[in-house]
Length: 219
Image (tube, rainbow, N blue to C red; front, side, top):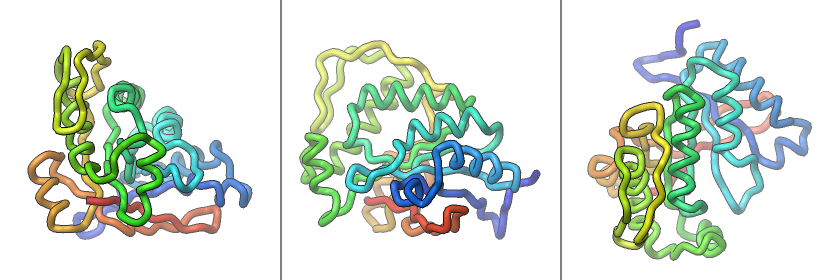
């Protein structure tokens, strides 16, 4: 089945993995089945969102299951909030998902929203005021772990005097990392530090559970 492409735009599906969809009768296995059907219909990509404020199936766990059940589609986060997780462990997890998917992972990342994400960052032990520096440090650390064996790392806010050996992703250098956002500052940051793609906010898709979801990111 050829991919859905309209005017050069490929179509992807954001999985409805929140508690509301599960309470309405959806199941994690049904989400995987939706992903398989989307691949059969020609969708180019399958995405999962991230949150601590709103209960949902953890995105990297869900994408691992989707990767095992599909063969062609890109599997990606829209978006992952790296501040919620230990950076070194997340590098290992992302490399593992890339290996399981045989190089089909795309990592959309974001830094949260003022007025909404502060409590999430407090819970994760990350200073919201330095969220952009933290995000940049995390992405830099991931790439260093994926391409070499650094013994230490010292960024703007992240400092590690010792780092363990890291598993290598399926692709040299690791999966592409895309920045979620829509501001001029986000575009500049994308050009300087991230893969040459940007996830725009408010990508709405309809879903079989009768709900709607949006892929949103922050600068």
